[in-house]
Structures are given as C-alpha cells and as structure tokens.
Image 1 (tube, rainbow, N blue to C red):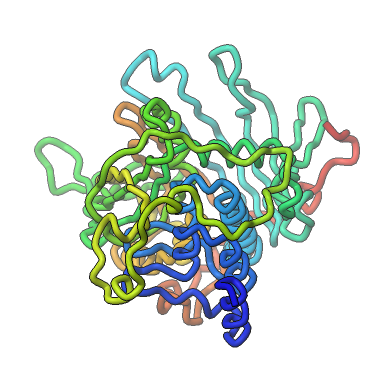
Image 2 (image 1 turned 180 degrees about the vertical axis):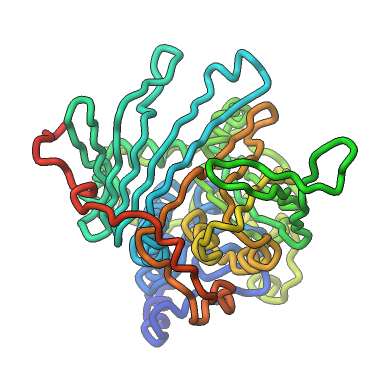
Length: 474
C-alpha cells in the first residue's frame, strides 16, 4: 500500500480536523507534506480539515513553504483556501458580531495625510466623512473619488453596507452627482476553484507569488500610555486638544514593536530589490504572529511562476517538488529525535531570511464625555487580523488605555508623512449595548450605567440605507 492510500485510511479513523497537531519543530502534517512535495497527501489532509494558516517554529505556514519551493499548483490551492476562509470570517465578524455591538449613531469624522515636505504635502489626500449606522446597515458619505492628472477627484458619493443581503449586494456605491449606483463587492462573493478566470483574483495571486513571503508579529509586553504635556514653563499641565465639540486629553501610546521576517529565495534579485514588491508582500501578509526564527541562510536567485489565470490548477501528482527531489532528506528517526538544526529542517530548501524591527507609537486623544464601550473598538483588532489570536494585545490595551473614547489618533506612516483621524461628532440614536457577560478574553470593563442624556440624536430614516428609486445602474 502506497503512502497516500495509507494516510487516507489512517485519517478515516480520526476525528475531522484532528490532523493539525504540531511536532517538536512546530510542523503540522500539512507542513511536512508540502515540504516533501507529496501532492496526494496534501489533498487527503485538506479533505480532513487540515488548516493552512498554522505557523511552525520558524514562523512559516504551509503556503509560505509552497511558494518558496516554487510549487505553484499547491501554493495556489492553499492560498485560495486561506483567502476564502479569511473573507468569510471577516464578513462574519463585521456584519454579525461588530455591528451588533456598535450602537446606532450618526458620526462625523475627518482624516488626512500631511507632511512637512512642501512637494509631498500637495499630493497627500484628506476627506471629511459622515457615518450613519442603524441595525446592521451602515451608510458612509464622502467626497474623495480618486486620483487623476496629479490631483484628487472630488464628488458626492456614498457607500451602503447591508449585512442582511447576499455577497453581491452587501456594499453599494452611490454617485449622487450622476444619480448612479454600483455593487462593488461582486469580486468578494464566494467562488470555487474553477473560477480562476477572475482578473483581479489572478492579479492578486501573481503579485503574491512573485513577492517576498513576509510574516509579522507584534510585541506588546512593554506597551505604555503616558500623558502629553504642553507649555514651556508649566510642564505639569496635560495637553488638551479641541477635537470638534470635544475637549480630549492627549496621550502617547508607545513601545509597540512590529517584527518582520521575509523569505525571498523564490524571487530573483532584481524583483527583490523592487520596493513596490516589498510593499505588496507586506499588504498580503496582514498582522500575524510567528515565533522566533533561526539565523538567515544563503540567498537564491530564481523567480517563481504563478499558475496560468485561464486554467484550473493541474491535478496533483505523487512526485516531490523540484526543490526536494534532488536533496538528501534527513533520516526519519533523526527528525523525530528533535536534534535537527537549521538547514536540515527545510528539506533541501535554503531559506534566505531577512528580519527587521520597528518601534511604533501613536498620539491619541481621549474624550471622557463620549461613551463608547471599550470592547467595541478593541474588537476592530479581529477585523484587521482575522487569522490571529490577539487576545494578549486586547488585554494590554484594555488595561492600559485611559478612560474615554479616542476621538483623535495621529501616527507616522512614513518618515515624512503623518496620518491623522479625528472624530468631531457622535450622536447616539439608540442606547449602546452594555456588556454584562464574559467575553472570550475576560470580563468586559464596560459594565456601567449610561446617562440617558447621551441619546441626543434623532432616529435615522430607513430610506438613507437604500438605493434611491431614481438612480440607475452604473
């Protein structure tokens, strides 16, 4: 009996999804199957619920290993599974969880990118938005439409989010100047592996397959939140910012360290030196939390080839990938002993690893006269990183942030560019949800009485959240 058939029969005796155990090195069975190039074994493991997002002791997922070994068919299939899972979880978190916690409200906010460099500042965008939420529907009014001829296009547009509708109708854009509407989430609808003719989907994959594989983790053990002080002589007076109608105390949230590691043995030197490829690789990875990594090894210089966008990935074969076919594998007993080090654990693949560390800080202004449950805006972490357990970071923020709501956040996004978000008005139209229950990460700190005077806003009209009858499809 060959290995794939033996594995299939063995998995049939196990509970579904129970094949994700990690060994001494942090590898799952799917890690080993990918590194050995056993395509049939990969199929059986996926059919039995193997997860594609688990990181081993070096911080890499099975997808990362497949990409770095230039096994395009396997990498494409695993990435497709992870992308679909992330999308479904993000939609569930936003429409079914996050929106149910947020009280119905009418909010005005402003955002801008600014710089002290004159030539740069003239090209940086800014906008004023109005956000209205009722039930599981959200309307966002804005004016920024796009960039053209070295200038930003302005108009009168709105986005309607409806959690009760199907995928293709969840988000609709309204152009009030031309009285047109357009569904903007058709590319987010669930798709099958045969639907690889999507140009946007294939473009995203080709960028990932030809960019360095990047993993991030956040170190927050020493996170601190200290008041900012104003004045030359009266240094004991805390700085207070006037943000719209609110007077907010200014704090600096610092000592948040973001560590990144990248592998680029599958990318040629010319592509690796391209800064755009690095940025695209960073955007694809999201915030993830790998464990410590080994020392960087030698660098390869071959580029990867993504699968064709017009064909379905080829049927799996029982051959090893090209990166391991000619390499001598370590004895199984030596692997199980836990004594293998460094290069031997990658089964013939020489990982070219580079690591960087960045200490980031934010200037945050908290308004104490704005009631907003802390757990609501902390749950945004789940939306930003749907694959990761950021329980420890949520607990650190919940215990160290001052009382009130962050009505202004300012942070450097590049050495000469700073981003600022200001919430100038919040009017509640429904009592905020109080948390008297236990959350997954502990007791909610928001179980408190609410002053009835905070419900100052008028009830929002339902027509605001639907397409006007006189608007036409774009």
